Image 1 (cartoon, rainbow, N blue to C red):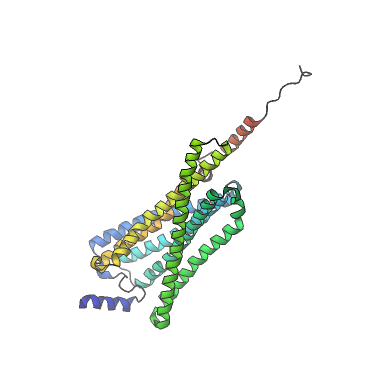
Image 2: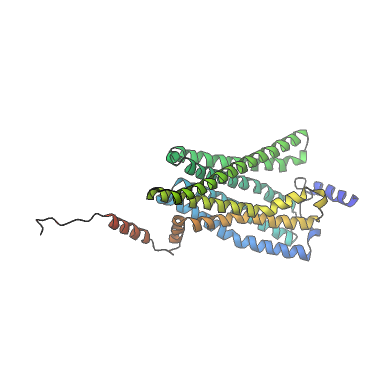
Length: 351
């Protein structure tokens, strides 16, 4: 009991912001070293593909007017947030684990920076997923007024709001990390307000996403039955299939979000229960390192999902690598024009 209290006091003295959850040389064993090397390898391999794929997604949508639909613009904005999260988060994760593996002190400063920079991009991505969910919700619920409701100006305001929330939470954590040396009553109030505001924002986004998701897929089931039982026009049938595909893409993105965040949620839940919190600090930090890697790998999976589910974005990305011939789309368009061209019957005078 006294040794744990001494360890806690030592942690508060060495790194007040992270307290016990900061690395020490004594935590380095054969087991933790192998895990650190494996984590460094995974994060290092993921950095370049994450940056490249997300940058390509942003580039293709912003440079090709045919791809600049509202849904694709929101996906490009989500790719932009994933680009930032992967570039900063994965790089800092590699640096932190290299310092741990080779016992390069001090540990506190870099690990504090790593922790602080995780909050902002997470909320930015969550905000963009909320915007994508609302976009699909309106497209399915009120298709006739979709272009009136979802405008480029409103998309811009929503994206700016998502980034503003991420910047606010990053600044908040930075202030908490810097001002903890002079912790007092005002610090305690500020910390409580920050924690509550972060929880409220996350709860609002998750609730909105869940509501839109439930409505979208219940409506998809209804539309499928309608296509099977009613005679509808070909244009209506194409619109329904397009909405269904976009909704399933959203479902896959949300599924990846849940899977990648699951290890972190489990660790946080177990850590809050004293009777289950029996891991030594070194092992717990290794588990949290892998959980953080899982969260950051979502930034790599998302652009792969865009390219897999959206053939227009996929073709544009392949054209960037010269894998697909650029004139294929032109050939398809010419073929469609020829098929739609009316037949010209020769006149009697010509014969």
